[in-house]
Length: 400
Ligand code: TRP
Image (cartoon, rainbow, N blue to C red):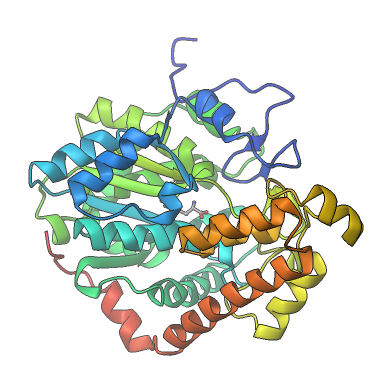
């Protein structure tokens, strides 16, 4: 037990599965996020934190924050304290590139990160873990790098501020930056094989690259990994991420204490459910479960009409009488992620639950909300040239 630490958790059979590789809920209403907060030992984002957010930033809370899509955090108050005192921090997030186009679920942390960058006006670092994909899947190094470049364009199209955003892919960047590698080794010296097994569940037949990989996801949470950006200043870091990445940052926070570096703060999102229902998250490997950012309006319409799980009743008569269930209805859930107008959303909920609004009508509202959102995104994506991409990848000082 000597080297057991806080970052290792015990799991019961009836717990939802949430780790960096698997997400599966046990109930049709989806993952029990309150239970997850208890299990992970993070803190719930409550009304008090949200109103403090609004007070300190002078901005109305983002709808993903108000509606509990971002639901959990670690040390968010210290970030607000810093901002209040006029001090800087930076944002760090990332993505494991995949060959498929990004889907709507991938957008959630990035949409919110863009808002955080706009509101706080701080530098943002985006890590593309092409090394992770090469290690975990049967993918050649060359192909993983290519996937990272394509995904970088998908991410840039979200609209990040070029003068304050640095994007890198591990397979090209780490060899160019000794300070990053040196921090990786500092981190590796703090974590035993036993601990990494406990946190991530690695086994004896996992390749050794997987065992060191957590140090690569941890290193960007320390500002000294990027001397060309931060001049070796120690700056605190806030990581917006989906809750499945938390194990990496539990480890990073343990290590930070040992290295006498600031522990990264975290703000966690829940998952955008798959079309078929809230037990599963949207996943790139199942095209019928996901709406992709390169889907055509026709594909979006067909997928929602055909697959979006309905909380409506079996017949119109029954629906008019009993009303629909917004707790399990996927079209409604998507509206709560993508329809910004609070009053309109409340009205839709009332009408659907009272039976006034039918499933087909609700689906049409979801289609009419998501389609223009994706079309606008596609127009921005078409404008991201290789040259634009290179500018985000250039090693340079950011505005801090
Ligand atoms: N491992 C993440 C994934 O597979 C990618 C990632 C790297 C990341 N660094 C991160 C995600 C920081 C969130 C925050 O998608």
